[in-house]
Length: 249
Image (cartoon, rainbow, N blue to C red):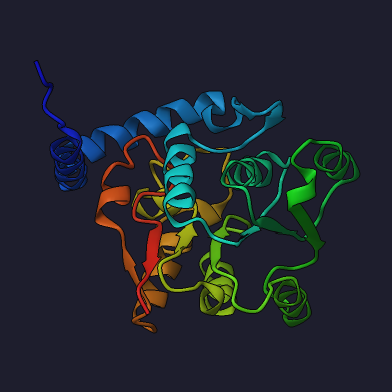
């Protein structure tokens, strides 16, 4: 007795449910309240990837690996290295693919964090650049590490103020190649009014001066990107809803 091959149907249902979930504003509001509550316990700081702290929400890690696996970029640029878990996570996916490298940029790569990255098995796929991410000299340094013809993905996860993120978008958005993704982290802050914002956060973490505002401003400047309704639709319990943009030109 033959068993029906239901892979196509399963994929169609997965996509439809992802889009539908993204349209459920009531559930998104509940998720936002839960994420803000979890922040009391530093929820995004509780996870590791291959032994190294990765300061990410699990949903964002899953979404990023889907994007990397589906597009298989030659180069991934991430601004904001922190403790190193994120660049090593992306490097490990590239290792499974069998090609590529991650360029990590940070204004301050602390000695102990650099040591952790350099001693890790995935270090051979990571290049670190220290300096202000939007400084022209740093941008040019990044460009020098991207081979001609390489496919490029960009993840922006450093200073989350509106002006800084917009400067990064303008500097690194043009590097993203058609079919790859531009990811703007911590867009969730754009949905948080000051009275609901976590008290331990700086005043930058309020609606209006945050990554979502920068992303929306940038999308008015360019027609190269569009939000991915499937990836973004699934981003409940996420720091970056709406932050996954696909390069279409």
